[in-house]
Length: 258
Ligand SMILES: C[S@@+](CC[C@H](N)C(=O)[O-])C[C@H]1O[C@@H](n2cnc3c(N)ncnc32)[C@H](O)[C@@H]1O
Image (cartoon, rainbow, N blue to C red; front, side):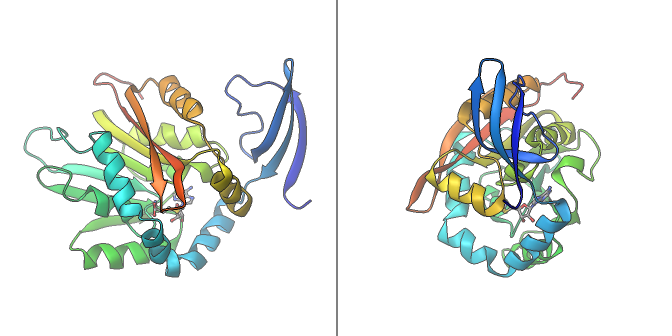
């Protein structure tokens, strides 16, 4: 079948065997061996082309799933944007895989004081849509084309780094999380929403060849990166999918080499 691979491999400690080319569809463990069906991820350029096509209707999708409200609720639960200001400067926010800007819209009104918004995305058309929608909402946002696993910004330059429904597209989601942590200032907050294993997750996985990430797996990844104050909450995606995703948050330690 197109894009599928059968694997038989020793169990990898963080369930990331074959990371780099495939995502797991179904995996069974036999002692210290894993038998699995995995799916080849879309290449970055293939995915960007697919999102270029989706860009024109993404805002409708975002509205249908109530993304701004859902993200706002989770950001408040994680206390993202409160107590973030260091000195008198603006709070610097980076949204990775910004889409049409739903997370930036959700953050508005939550962050105290001035905010400098930045966003990256691999799809040029999504960036054009983000520019249009955020300008329309009076949000100035510096937008760059770039991938979450090679963020085109200096280390330790943001107070808040977010990614909503992006990490699951990567062959190795941890590489994306590591980059998010790199560009965070010490004491900065990371916020990521990821599709969880469910009926809805299975549909998304088949449609987009993505990961679904359990609460336990997400927390393990954040902990292994040395992040602190890790928390999570279920994220509703519209009326049908009350628990379609999980929002995770964490803090980069004040003294960190990450
Ligand atoms: C499911 S959409 C989510 C968009 C937005 N975050 C939201 O919540 O509405 C995924 C977005 O991530 C972008 N994307 C996919 N892979 C990416 C990568 N490796 N780096 C940055 N953006 C990526 C897509 O172009 C798309 O805009």
